[in-house]
Image (tube, rainbow, N blue to C red; front, side):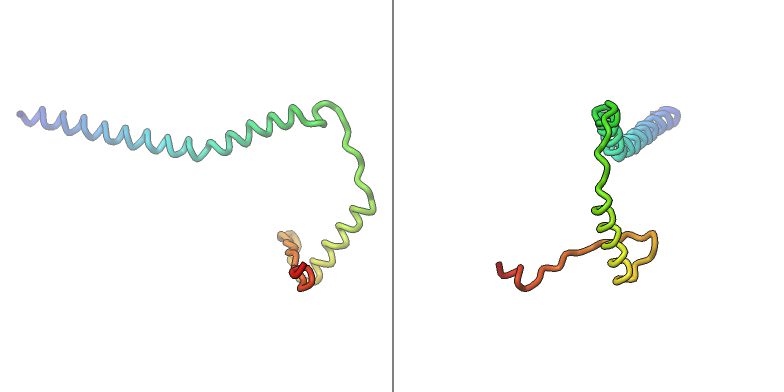
Length: 101
């Protein structure tokens, strides 16, 4: 085997390995983007089937319900000293009477 043949075989082998690495990287990127693509397709399906797309209006919210929700959120915010703009999680605590039943 001549030196030239050895170099060509080495270059060919290295190019095959790098091509395989590039294809693997592209496959990993494609797999990572599959959930985004499926979410986008679902959104398109939902928007085309949604009542807003057909022109049907949603019933208005009851002002009393909105007032109660806003009041509860404000009380929880004040009790737990949550920062404005942060997520507020309200955990339900089971009382001893509920736990027995």
